[in-house]
Amino acid sequence: MEDHPGEHFSGPSGPQVRARQEAHPCPGDRVLQVIAIDGPAASGKSTVGYAVAQRLGFLYFDTGVMYRAVTWAVLDRGVDPRDEAAVGRLAETVRIEIQAPDALHADGRQATVRVEGQDVTWAIRTPEVDKHVSLVAAHPRVRMAMTRRQREIGHRYGCGQGDKAGVVMVGRDIGTVVLPDAPLKIYLDAPVEERARRRYLELVGRGKEVSYEQVLADMRRRDTLDSHREVAPLRAAPDAVVVDTGGLTPEEVVARVVALAHERGIGREAPA
Ligand code: DC
Image: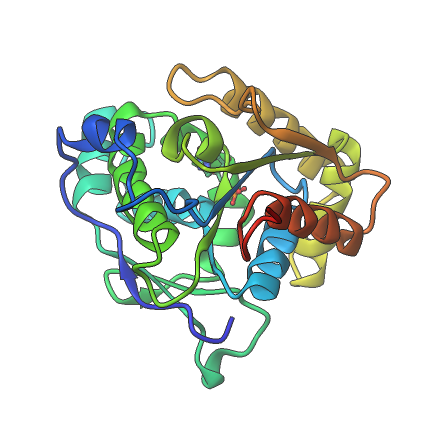
């Protein structure tokens, strides 16, 4: 990513969140330049979202790294991931930064992630973080703190007030909760065995010693937790376009999403 700006994600959540969600966020009636992409782990969200953002000159924003960064901080500090008060406090105060990788860090990363100044880009991708992230992300206080920051970025970039023409935001609840006003919502899906195979190959490629069975079991567990939590469970928004990535190449999915965006006046004007 060439010029992902520095962003800070911390601070208390405010009561103004609801009011902001209901009003049109941009001055005038310009189409909000936002594509929301949701779906389960390893459904292709980051590959597709990143490529779509590059094509349109949009900011690519993967909200999963925020939940992973909080989880890393929880484990690093020895906080019990089940302790909602302690985890919530940490989520509200910890300084998380997400920036474009510089030339020194051209190691395949899509962004550099720092927690209190420490580079945790790869540390947040370990099986240990995978194992605990769904539990941490299920705490309402954690979600409130993260959602507030994500919505602010979505509206700023979506209204043309960022340093990119718009934003592709990727996660589990972007179309349903974070940016329900997004004019294009995509829900990517693929069979769990296929997603586990992708994640297994990715981990082995990074030198991790894991078995396919272990990755599959963890993915099933995460699917269940993400889909059944009380607050903002993983699900397709009623107006989302559902795409099964199982039989498609990433390029085919990207082309489909870009075409849908253009039809709706995202990335360029819709035809009259
Ligand atoms: O996309 P990922 O696997 O990096 O996400 C890590 C976890 O974060 C995932 O198990 C659920 C959670 N998450 C979430 O609850 N809401 C989001 N918008 C993004 C991620």
